[in-house]
Image (cartoon, rainbow, N blue to C red):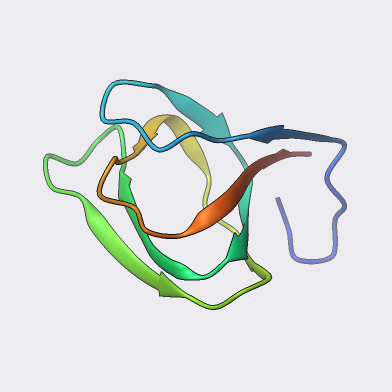
Length: 78
């Protein structure tokens, strides 16, 4: 998803080490740590995000890990 494009679909994301997530962006309503494991990576990456942040993260079979402290996380699809 390009910064100038709009999402056409949105869905709630529950942090889980076992649930697959595929999206073109992520909205974080309440800031904190967003712990992401990309499909190709063996280690998780921690993003420290503020309230109301939109991250242009393209995930295909990725994971929003249970260690995530951010809440109101929404997956965005273009």
